[in-house]
Image 1 (cartoon, one colour):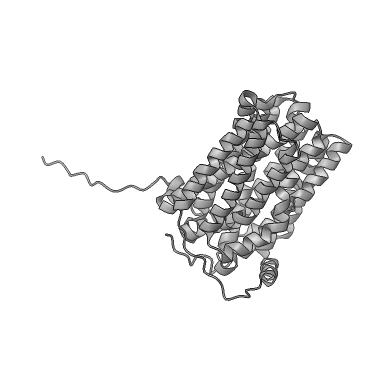
Image 2 (cartoon, one colour):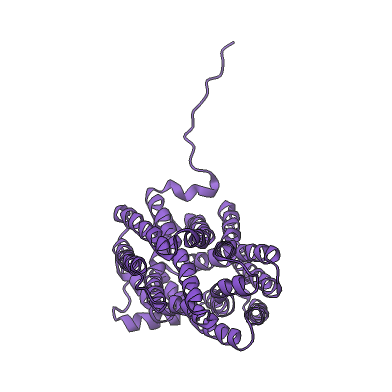
Length: 425
């Protein structure tokens, strides 16, 4: 009896990781991961550094303010660059600036000359780089994978961001306890060096300039008008503003809550800070594994509401064993928010308007510093748990109103005719 010959079929990557079949995505993903890791390590370390030096919750929260304020000032300019400047050059330029700043901070810490005020300068550099290149990083994923692969690519990128949010603060806390703050900046410097080496090999299709106005300010106004005229994009911006005003500023208070409410040290505080990253990693993995998602808007707003409800649990908790899982679930909710935020922009906006729309969203993210100031003021006047609880309740109510009044988020996503013209590379 003759055996049936086996046919060897070339198998691609598993469905969850199908974006990695693109060689340039395989360079961009680890480069983004290292950038995110360096950012989260620094934001925790800088906050803890200021807390140890000053014992002032207000000054700790101001580190977060300095790290997000550039979004408000530079967000639309970042969107303009996404439509008019070669992406690879922009990535290398911003990360070289971060590398130089990290090396300078390493020297200052090692010599004992670093004052807590330097933390704000470092946070400003990080925020500026984030504002300038984030729209281009997200646009590059669509350029590489096309409309059919953008949801998976963005979900995998969110997984990397979530993993860094989980590991970065925890690793920084361990390094601080073993080697002090300069050890964190040695690790951060290594992250940037490897990232720049990866970006030097990265290639993406050249930017196709649209036929619209070339004046920068005119371009910005065109982007704002475009978003305002599209119900889905307008709803995305409203949810983004709400989340950045009342949810994400909580991260800057985690070191304060950990030390003053839960009575922990740097290591457990770092684990607590990274707990939401673990939840976001699991949530992003669910999205990456899914196929034929049609109701992006429902996932977007449901995840946002879930994260605010669990923020309320974190606010009222006085036990580490409850606070830790609360932040894990909070992170799971933010995965739905962050993944679908970018995906909705990519699918709904026309290709020539995508960078401008992302710039408007970056401006919406830039409202976070206003929420940070409000949170700091309430914390100083009352307490950190009260401020977090108030934000959670206000944000949940606001999102319910947005979901009920902006019905475009509840409908299946309709892709723009010009959104998917870029073929995978």
